[in-house]
Image (tube, rainbow over all chains, first blue to last red; front, side, top):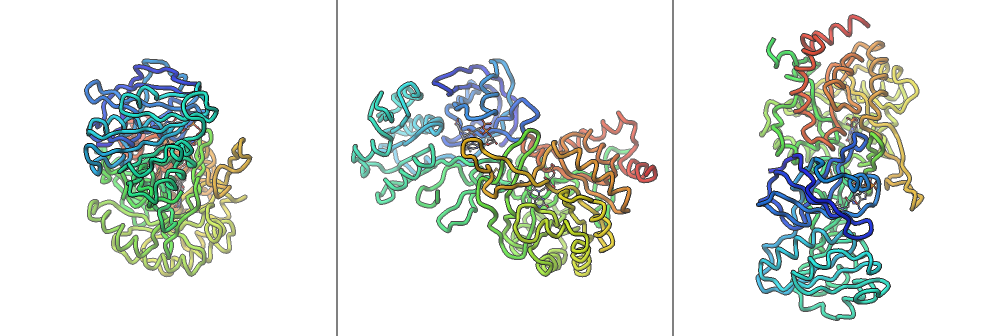
Length: 259
Length: 311
Ligand SMILES: Cc1cc2nc3c(=O)[nH]c(=O)nc-3n(C[C@H](O)[C@H](O)[C@H](O)COP(=O)(O)OP(=O)(O)OC[C@H]3O[C@@H](n4cnc5c(N)ncnc54)[C@H](O)[C@@H]3O)c2cc1C
Ligand SMILES: Cc1cc2nc3c(=O)[nH]c(=O)nc-3n(C[C@H](O)[C@H](O)[C@H](O)COP(=O)(O)O)c2cc1C
Ligand code: FES
């Protein structure tokens, strides 16, 4: 069931420059949460008319908590970062279709590719794929070592391939260059990616000639999150903007969607 | 008086158990996830997304930008076309909610297109009234152009009235110098009622890219920021034209609803408020009886009569 309930902030801290991790406790349909699903947070200021979509990075149905990780990019996320533990936040969700986990076999070698604020949904995904018995590799990129977050999460779910633009940690270059250097495109049965458009396009280019299934999680400016307003549309092969990121997405078949 | 009856209002073609309906473009054709959060039967009526003759793919993205106390949208009347709506969308809605009155918003690039859409849409037994959208700021031909010139607006209203089998509410654009003049023109064209207001033309510019945020550059401003404009326009128009008005523009609370009635409205539509609060409509319907008690108002019907006689 889809709900909009008040959750309480039970932890909130900075995990890298401009990156915050927030843990919210409250009631919603935990059974419906799949990796790639997101929530929409109502900002506690009447001047904001739009909820902010954020992916679920971790989820605990027993303690009734969800973890979100976000970057400050504008006024809304800045306001969010100032909220103290104990504050109530209204959470609409769970939303979105998530990554199709049922299509991957235990033992399969899978690759996760992420950058920037695309990492949070991949954290939940890496966990789920590991639990399913998949061999998980994760390739993630940052500008510089000081910006890195999520390293621990991905290290404990499998192999971590780390790139920094300036080479201050891991491979020097971007994730695309790292994958090219590794020259290991053919071993993966599924590739999952979330991050900036450039990274998603790179994944499409890199893997479209392989057998691997490609799943991309997209971002789009949203208003309703309910499939009603047509604000968040993306186009599939036919070039028509007819798929709504909030209901048909945010995860799409990487061979279908046009970026 | 029963709570139910206190909220009931009657408008041409519409016997509403309460005056609250989702505004066009903010609720699709009812084919969305709102139905998972409340029973659409609670609504007074539903105003569906604009229909055009042929399918429209809408504008490029981004289609939405936020402003303080408002939202800019440039969706661009994306819809599958009147025939698909009649064949596929409305039957599903009607089957699930046979008692829910449907107001069909119609748009076009030419008078001939409006007339054809009106003819097909109004012939359906599933449609109780038309909302003639002469005010969309997000399309490059037709749309708002029909709503900014009195003579054109009058001609179009007359042509649509001639073919429509159901009452026609003309949705007015606030992007005019004198809204009263347009309201009088569509009244002379035979309109059965008015819907007001549509969005105000606006723009936001991204400081980093130095370009407008919306791909369409301009968009329509909605939300609480435009409510005073809606109140003022409804107040002016209701004094000049004797037609029932469906009010919209930033309505969020029961107080806002009563304010619209005091300006001269007969029913209300809710758009932007859904984005923060997906149950905005049923919440309002629940809150209204208490607000009426508080203000010692017997019923909405009586409030309409009192406001009209004081004008
Ligand atoms: C499905 C989905 C999942 C997301 N998950 C995460 C996540 O886990 N972590 C994270 O840091 N960010 C995530 N984002 C992006 C996040 O929603 C935006 O960064 C955030 O809304 C910006 O709000 P703001 O008020 O700070 O920025 P402003 O620029 O002031 O916001 C203005 C408006 O634009 C919208 N907007 C701005 N940037 C984006 C964007 N990149 N994507 C969508 N809408 C945007 C805002 O929601 C708001 O409506 C996700 C987006 C989507 C669609
Ligand atoms: C996303 C969006 C889409 C809209 N689409 C339509 C439309 O298709 N036809 C129409 O007549 N009005 C459309 N409108 C205008 C609304 O119906 C309403 O007149 C306006 O938003 C003011 O009400 P509000 O402040 O409650 O949103 C749209 C508004 C929004 C925000
Ligand atoms: S945000 Fe409204 S349809 Fe997706």
